Amino acid sequence: MIPRPCRSAAAGRRLVTRIHRPAPPMDAWPGADPRLGAPLYLDQLGLWDSLLFSRPGSAPDGPRFDPAGFVVRRLAARNSAATLDAFYARNHYTTGAGMRGMPIGLYRGDDLLGVAVFARIARPRWARENFRLLPEDARRSATARRHLTVTEAEYVALSRFALSATHEDGRPLGKGGASWFLARCLAGLEARNRALWVAQHALAAGRALSPEQLRLLREASGADRGRGRGYIKAVASWSDPWHGHLGGITQLLGFHWTGRTNRGRWAKEAVGRRSMRRLSARMLAKATNPAEQGHVHAALRLAWEGGDVTIALGDDGPQHDAAWVRDVAPSTAPEPVILRAIRAAWTEWRRLNVPDDAPVACRWRRGTGVEWRAFPPKHAYLVGLGAPYYRRCTEMRHVPLTARLQREAAIRSPGRRLDRRREFYPVAIPPEELNPDLRGSHP
Image 1 (cartoon, rainbow, N blue to C red):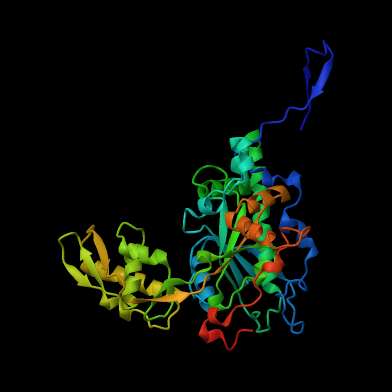
Image 2: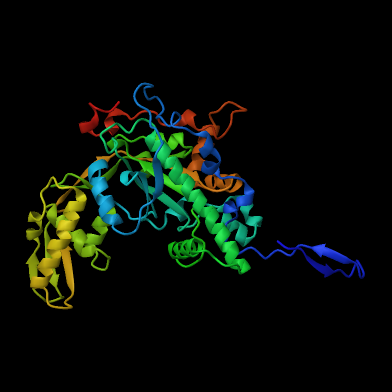
């Protein structure tokens, strides 16, 4: 920045050199300031190698992951949905894409061997329920309080994480590939925050922006409902013990274990009678509310499971049975195949049976096509991003994490560190929490 000479009344006619800096943009999160020290994953990335990325307690023998030739980059928007659906059908236990978000791929040449999707949590009140300011924050300014906590648009969840077991030529991928891949995904999120900080300051100073900076500012503004921030301050992750997941990879990468969901109690969830797959509460809500986006497809998905669904044309129009949808896909088909078949069949059925612009609603008789089963609570994990001070501020304002640390502090001996993580973390899945189909094969 060029110093600008100016006159000072106290100095008489003597010229005094002062540096005039442009005011920083109010929405620029200080935790992404490149001058405040390297963030967690950008700082440690150079020290990590493939030998470190093995699950705790794993056997020392077996092939190790060799990162040579691997590239981590975002999936192109074009045809990404079809690519993800095909990859999940082969490599993820749900066989479905789940929430759409920011997909990052692990590539070797043109072959996609891993996918991590960071998405906004579907429940909009999650941030307000889990992040609170501390009592001492009351004396801070409104801008400082906003930067210290996390809003609905400033966190993401690791919605999907899947890795192929073998290379394209059939060789095993090796131990440590999952941790190596996820670490570089998190480093990419922190690098994105720093690039956004630079772009916002360049915009405030009136400097020319590169095409990449313009794209990043548009993406951040759209993700943050037009408020112009778009930073990612925290990443949340949930591990389901029913499917044999305990969160070993996230523990290894420095995530905080924040306890169990549903206050540690087992929860009843809907399971499709035909597919025997767990159905989300969001799908059930869409099926019962015609005003919801995606209502028809959710109701037809339940009709495919065997639910009692009628298609009503208008308030007083004719009603049709939706049993025809059960023949569009077999019961063993992956979830993306089922959804595509339902959409295609619905498009054709509507073309033949629904007049133009006629309102359509599907009436699902609640409880049909599904059965309710109890499932164990999931393990919740959280990590803050950004410079060390702001990362610590984010983590310590997370209510479940603070409550867990306070409970542990009460049973510790004096002088022990409060944030010593591994001492209380889960290390094994109780047999009653594991899917009976996996009990013979799970270590």
